[in-house]
Structure formats: C-alpha cells, structure tokens
Image 1: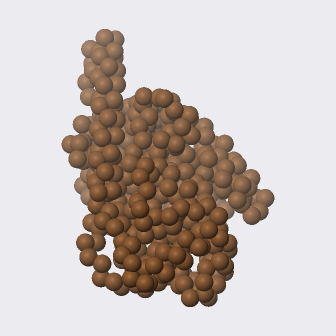
Image 2: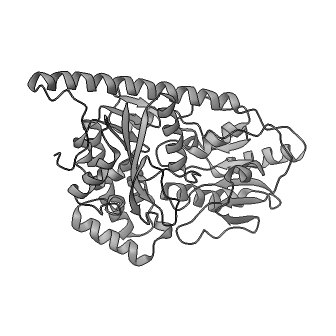
Image 3: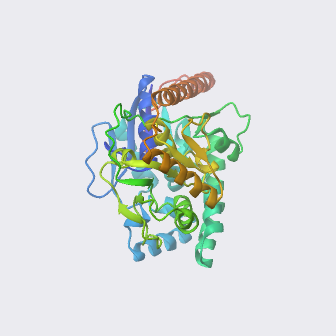
Length: 413
C-alpha cells in the first residue's frame, strides 16, 4: 500500500516540537506495517531539503513566535477575507490545480493520510480527492474555545471564538469523509463526536528515544519544565506554574524552564531561570531532579508526559497532563491545586537530594506504548483496506475502469 502523508510541515530528521515528535512515532508505526509512505508539505526556512520521497511545497514561516507583528496581522486579515482559520490561511498558497499538480509528483497512491486539520482546512478538496485517514492530534475547536476563555483582551477572544467555530466545521467534515479517524486519546475521539464509531481508533504514542541505562548523577536544577510555550494551551499551564505554584516553593529549590516563547516569558521569582530552546531536550530532562507536568487545559496527549514516563523520571503532574495515559508510574504524584503541586515537588526534591533512588526503568512503559500504537495503526489499515476494496468493487460494477488503482492527477475533481 502506498499512502501520501499530507501535513503542514514535512517531517524533520531531528524533531523538536510535540507535533513533530508525534509525527515521527506515527510514521515509524506505518512503516513497521509495511506501508510505503510519501510526504507532501512545507518546510521551515533554512531546514534541510527533503528526501526523494517528499513533495516539497516550499519554505514557510508558520509559528507565531517567528513571525513579525505585521505578518500576524496579514494572516488575520487574509483569513477574515477567505473564511479560513488563521492556521489554514498560512498554508493557502496554492490554487487547487497547482496543488494537485504538485501532489501528482508522488505518483499513484491508494489514499491520503491527512495529518491534523491545517492542510485540509487550507485545501478542503483534499478530503474528497482520495480515500483518507484523518489523524486528529487535538480536538482543535475545543482548544480554541479554551484559548478564548483564557485570552486577556477582547480582540483575541473574538479571534479564538471565530477559530473555534470554523475548526468545528472542518473537523466535522473531515470525520464524516474519512474512512479511518485516529485520535491521540479516546477522550479526543469522544470530543469529536465519534464515541462508538468503528472508524475511530485512538493511538498510543511513544517518543522512541532510548532511555538512559545509567544515571550519571548530574543535576543542574531541582525542577525542570520543557515545552513549546508559544502554543497557547501550554502557555496557560506555564503561567499557572510561575504565578501560582512557584510562590509556594522553598527559595532554595531551583527551577529551569526550557522552550520557545511567543513574546516575553512571565516575570518569575529569583529561583526560576529561563534557558530558551535547548539543543538536547533529553539531556535537559535527565539533568532535572524532578519534572513538573503543569498542564492546565488543551486536548490531545502531552508528549512531555510520555517522555517523562519513558525516561523513568520522577514528576508531579496535574490530572490534565495525564489524559490518555492508562497506567501512572509509582514515582509520579498528582496534584491539581497550586499549593499541593508545590508541596509534592518539594517533597520529591528533598527525597532526591537525600539520596533516594527515584528514577525507574521506563522501558516497559515505552514498549507497551509502542505495541498499542502498532495495534491501532494495523487495525486502521485493515479497516481502510476493507473500505477501499468494497468501494472498488462497487465502482467496478458501474465502470470496468473504476476498480483500478487511483492515481493523483491535476485533472481530478
């Protein structure tokens, strides 16, 4: 089977964001099932050219954190004029005919994997052009509604509410038209209105990095937080930690926060330092005594939670950080209020300083995640293949030519 993986950004060799890490895990699972994948998408400026299996749609600035104020305003104005979401408008650089001509470079394919809502939001015809598998990384309309609720000004609230309404329409259409829908948790599939739908299959995710077999004992800070803070749901959790949790921490507990911001970071006490994007996220994690998983909203699965468990790291997590996770390791504590979260962090830090061995072997957790991911991808491919076969039989009854493998062509549709 040959599938075209249609995504906003082509896969990176060294993924850094949660979206890219999730993509890497999903792509590896498809390949373990023997699927031939080709890719179509844009690239960040200065990124490496893609391989021969990719249709490179060009360089594009997509993250708000890297865009100027003027560029953000242009995106918003053009989105208003086109009726698209802002995230989709960033990608809407091709006409239908031009995009289909480019996608034809992938050769004959059996269908599309529509990776998140951005590309089919920018190009609605994609979900009708070929049989598709839709991968929902989040319940995007719910995340947008949360962003509206947490926005600090009226303009942002209005923009997020508009995004939520448009995203709900896009997600409803994609779920209606797809032959298989994968979410990153059962709760997300329910949030998409797919409870009980046999086409809806949740994916477990594994980071796939080898966990450390030896603890070198290097501790650069007591508490570590890492994330893409330019993404609004992540920023809500960070602001909660800095403004509400940190004041309850003892002054001698040091906190390091890694990751990129859209604008400046929140003002913080003296025992907190911002270290920006780190060259090695795994090394940053391992150099922490304890990790803080301070998620306060959003949808989907928290990749930093999965990474923490696969590394066997001690952590304190909010209930929101644990969504989609079936089994919680023994060295992870849960707290939802600020004082309780700080107290749990302080207790784990003190135990670690006193010589307690709080790190576990996370390999069993990682293996269980990988096996569950493979089962879900395999089940999805079986359903996709059965639907493709039934469709081909029905079409062949109407036309002797219709049962042949569909090829991408700019003339289709």
